[in-house]
Image (cartoon, rainbow, N blue to C red; front, side):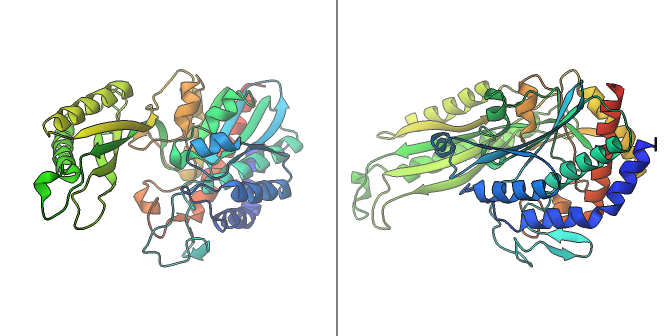
Length: 414
């Protein structure tokens, strides 16, 4: 029997152009979320996976649940390959992306290849890892066909709601008993293994006053004036967060951003209603429920200082932090060992100030890490920015690392 590691290397070297084309096809199908009409992308991804020889399960999420989560359509994809009795390792990436925004030097959906990079929305976050995981699994199948003995299974979980919280992606698949992996690898970047990340709360604040003519503003109750004072108190609170430090490498302090604001009736009318939404990042040492209560207390106390003003708060999202759990070390060891061989350097573990679908697997007791294609930092890839891009060499290297790590993990179970 040939060396399975050599087979994996040779297989992936021969399929680099195929992997590049696969990723480019995924980038060319928009899947912006919002508005979250992602079923067309799932349909295209499923066909591409079938062309690679995979059997693809399509799992549409019920329309009412999709709408309740702020989306128009959502179909989750599952691929299962069993090699024998043993553990199941899930590889999860999300196909929904943030809208492209402005400032692009290329078509956001053109998948232009420029200086060895593919440029387009989702090229790095995280359509790239559809390619990483699919081609890693193809390489594993090639090794088995050549006689490699593996026990266990690999599943591909391709979901479509990470950008709006992930509630109808991995946790929905788990709740429907469609899958129950023993380990999970979620989309990440290639030069570090993410073992922890922040949580996040999105809170909507509605401030209500009383309209009045701009010629007689004292006869109204100005909701915008009160909201401005609340915002000032929130920003003062934000400045104090710098003194709160996480013990997790790669994660620093809590953050707070007011990202949306709307209100008013017309230029010549005292505004009777203002609505704003805030994003509060929660470090691993914090409790999300306590964070929400503390912010609510600040906002209600601020509103009470303004006669005639009332407020209401609505939680949009509460994502718990992703923290290490037992079993994660097996994934870390396999990935680090093979990254050293492929990249020629030791890669660290770290935390990141983002929040991802990895937390859903971990919350279900499934040891999980983030690892996939990409550079050392999100900024290098212009993630969530104009001209998002991925160095194709990083895609190919990460694919080999993942394939070799999966091979080691399943060979150890044989």
